[in-house]
Image (cartoon, rainbow, N blue to C red; front, side):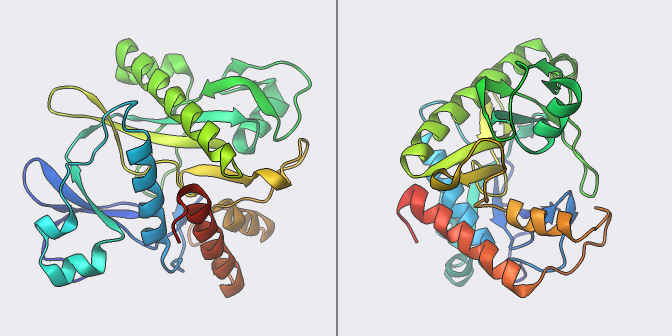
Length: 288
């Protein structure tokens, strides 16, 4: 993403941040795709724009639950018009926040690493679950399973709730857990009316200058969540996904050892992934 007149302050797996002033930054979603914490060589064309639109939809829809990183400014308020035109769909003006040092993962269904954990231990991240649950089954109640935030190139690690309290303190851990569960519960209920099951998701939070917990980064996108088409959902098997799980499944089947570099993803798998992202945006927001 060259040609931005602001100074770049950070480049993450997917997003790049640029300095506006001491309170605000420009957050730009690239077309990079990270799978198993490795950035793939091939970008997903238009992905950054689609995911930004999905996130913006959710930030707006869930704003009554908690404050978010929006400042109320548009890219046109902070960039020359030609630059703003190029970035309008993939960039947002965001508050500078102090990131909370855990990722808030919420699970409503038993899948992915949670299913593997349950098969071995009868629990997910130390949370005991009833016996006899099957893959992709809806959990008796939504569970909060935090993880550590890894540096680029490292793997996030699931941690217990007690470990989460040790990292960020008891009071903040309870707040993060309660807000994450409330956000997921409301979003999942809405998505179901649109034909999407949100199996699980990951939220990121920050603290503003007054210490107020604030929702940030991206929200309930196919990159931070597992979306399933409701009409293809069957307990006992992993439904086909709307999300980067599609590419993750291809990578798993390729025999790759999940260390960089990743194998080149075929063009047809990339094209189908873009189509899935578009479909998710359309179903959730009515927007193409």
